[in-house]
Length: 183
Image 1 (cartoon, one colour):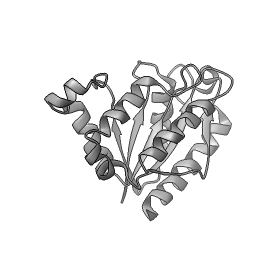
Image 2: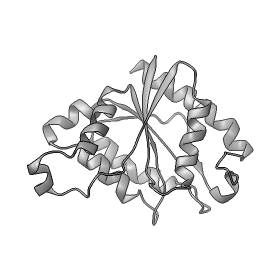
Image 3: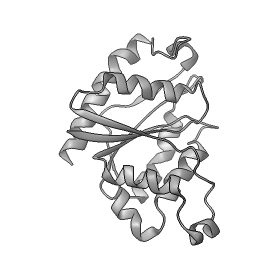
Image 4: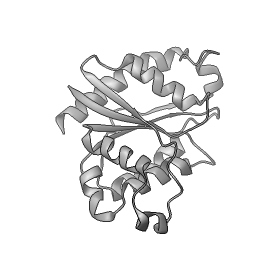
């Protein structure tokens, strides 16, 4: 069985990225286990906090990423870039630096996201590239998934209703799982 860890980069209730993650869980292949991890409770990185010990929320996320066959980042786009909260969580998971290879090196990673804006999360996903490269992760580029105009892509109950995305998402999940399985 392939195990993926999925992290949504938005904490708010009613987040389009949380909705997209939920939709991804529903269409994931049966032979794929997806462990949803949270960035809630991870403090802003501070070397003094690190010196006192890695916070439990960070340890939990690090171990989930390290144990998984692949990482799915469901990233919003804030001010044409990645969300600081998700970047902060990944930064924490790279601490201490000597442990970063165990957590990230060669780890297959895929990006997807949703935003109410017209451009999707293209710029956020592009902003992640240097970070993923620095951590020596293996970016899956088989498909790009960025949902624009998310207010119309999900219904009032948070279900994905955009027909193009509904058709595309199962293929995305299947192909990423196959990629992660091969690594």
